[in-house]
Length: 484
Image (cartoon, rainbow, N blue to C red; front, side):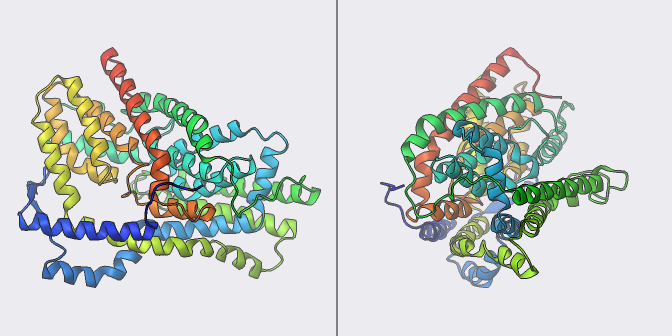
């Protein structure tokens, strides 16, 4: 894929963004930009990174900014399991067994989209685990592997709020909504984890249709045929030994899943929280490690049963396999981590977002138009502040009371927020997993940059935001229940 967009290397892009954040923090500090935290009424002032204290902070934290970068440890742990499964031939065997001679590419596209949309059940695992598998699946069906990466990425990011199941985000968002409603003495309503379930469940199928349509009509024709160096080995019938090994690996994986579920939902419940709940429980917090361990275990069983592995040294070789890819990721992640840390230290994101929220809350329009503007505002703020829980932690204390005064329930306000919070995830350079996405893309095309990604993802974000907002308007006008 040859991009016509003249963009710097992803590492260079994050370095330039860091310089921009440093410069802006200095400018806004000179003019004394500050806001009040809605919840605590505490003053938040922009901190200059060019002040003596800012320079000292930056020099003291360069290393810890990198080592403390949230996705870094998650990516490394997840890639261990994927590395063993790939090196042992387990993933290849699954693809050969699943696709076989009937290589229907459109069915593969649909499966990738659905898995991406449902992946928020296990948090951010979709960004790390699904993207490389989607590239392999697309490649196996004769489609461009970068198309698989982009399709999976858009499905995970833009569909982060939509699901037919309860996601890890639902209880946290609902708890903040209830806290904001209680602080404003708003009469209790339906603000539980499932308060938006009906709407978000239907949204899953709507988003799947939009992503499928754009992928077929725009993305894949634009990418063309893949002519890179990585070649799919082709289709060989699985031998009897490989079929037995695959069956053994699947049985081992299912047994592992049963043990984990039993340890979580049985009366023993060692993987549940101290209070018996799942929010911030060992199961939820450690879900990525549990998935990686399960995938790696299945890969090990397949490797030894098929004869690919004979000693523990072979397993270790599989564990080190992803490190070649992660070498590029480490370079990109280093500069990205500095940019994210500088942005957070300067308070630029919070100041800009709170100022915009205060401005929007002062607008006096019909309640439906206010909700539409709120969706668009959230989508805009999401470009610089991608964490849903962080945004809603202060936005809820501004908008829940203001919109309640217009007769809009807290669960309706929360639903509007979740539309804007998800739709623009795919196009923001401030996405925590952006360095990993660009690393995956560069594996198949060394010329891939943020511009390459933006070139193909903006259509998804724009159309999803438009159609999802139309669905919300229809829901609001008809007065349909949002959830349970």
